[in-house]
Length: 434
Image (cartoon, rainbow, N blue to C red; front, top):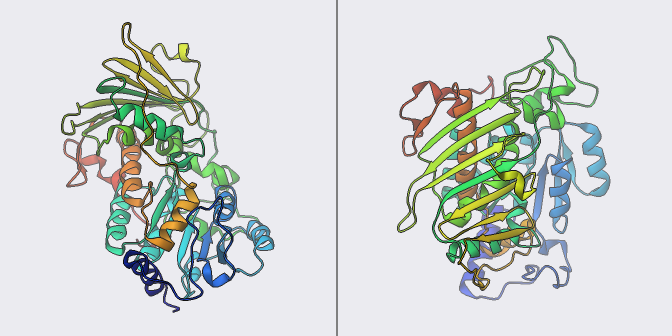
């Protein structure tokens, strides 16, 4: 059974039907206690595209499986990963990964501007995909990946690891909010400390030996090589990343979108300041006002994102450099990745909430089990695309002259601002298509 789509569908159908599987097929339901599989045939065949930094963490997260292909444009980084997985074939060009006929899934840990194309390639091949956050680099790409995910039925997971943090703090926050402990929530503040690294633009420059720079650039506009837009620093250029908002928005906005069951925003209004001497244009300080529609008996929500030194008025009293603050009619709830604290109004008493959301086996393990069993993932691409689109719309508003967007979600356009279109769908460099 070499065809990955047939192999995976067979596994999932057998689970759904309750049938016994032939020898050579098994999976771990409880990864912390289950014995390891006895044969490589009982493991997934995975390819990992991008193997350093977040890629190294993701590679470690799926290392229980068969790593059959490794890909990176940096030969030195690729060599380091290959030493750990000597059985894997190595590539500089991610497209060669898909020459493998026995793949079950692909892990994508490239810079943001290179997320969509390998994800789309994998989904069209019927392969499971794990991709780092933000899911994509543009709103249009988010829509394409969401559609391909629905068409393929593949198991997907966006690398929003805090969603499935071992301490399960986000789950407990969601339970408190949805139980109505602080009453209906109409106002949320989300702030993230830290700013943009100033970087320089150069007129001439060549990559060092061992770097496949044209492949790294991919669909982005070509610019002379310089360390200030390479490896981690690509995050601070619109051509490759989306600044602090794209870097951390999926982590922090995940909590209110999950807890309040928010759909795409109705309006988005961003303001910001560069605040640095670099040539890159991503703002050091930024505030984005989002409004969301009512959902059933849940009220409309006004959410504000802040990064850099900007915070909501009075936030210093909480002594948190980064946090999410829910304001309900009966109290407030302050949370970050691992902590939460209730502030009830005078005369109001917080009641205990029984856990209702099962703890996760781990962000990577959840995806692996989904591929093997057909079980759902909690940060699948349908959810990840909506979360990413919400985040990226803040950058669209900022880049379109810091103007308010009236978001027509069905038409994927700002109804009041046609000039925002060029930031919703980016133009690809010649030779690259989605």
